[in-house]
Amino acid sequence: MELISTTLSTIKQHRIQFSISWAIYLVVLFILTSLDMLKLVLKQVASSNQIQLFTSKETEQLQKYFFDRLSISAVGCFILLLIFFGVRIHQQKKRTVPTKQFIYSTGLECFLSILIASICLILFFTVFEPVYESILQFFYRQGLSQLKELPNFVLSNGTSGIAYSLHSPLSSELSSTTLLDLFLGSLVKAIFYISLCLCLSTIIFCLLDSLKKSRNVH
Figure (cartoon, one colour):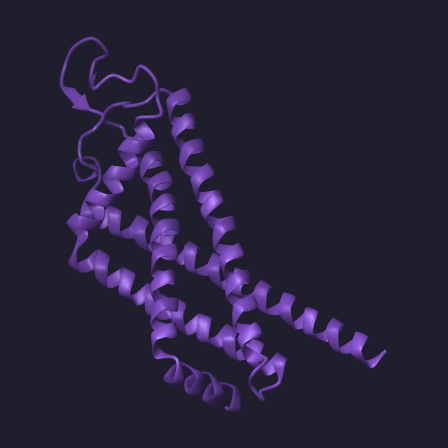
């Protein structure tokens, strides 16, 4: 209870800082969720029974493109958390709260920020699905631009039949229900990853605090 009251008191005293914190988590969640969602969308499109839009080599190139950016974003998220913890602990030197308790309080504050950011992202997707889809489409086309000599259309029978555009909206390939399922699945993975990074950051700084205290004793 003391930890919760300390965290809530800190949030009340630094409302602007807390608002900036969950806004940053919102951006990070959006990036991680969208990139992972694009990988799943590509998998869905590539395995479509109607027509094969991409060759296996093109699919691998696109998967690698989105996976590389997802990996970079994931590493950047962890580094950002470490920097955030470091800055907050440096600010804590002016306070009378024990360092370890402040670390746990900061971790709880970050977790609350993640929850708020997750709710906001879900609401954004639900209310402004066409906007979210257009942003997703932009990143999708950025991935397509990495492929050389990619045709604008693919014919259903190879050399004849119905022409399918490779740059057509994702909604034409996937239903709203499917997009929602992919979004929620990717969001859960993003939340799990950020929470894991948060736990690791808390453990790292607690260990550093313990090492610092043991050195001071000696």
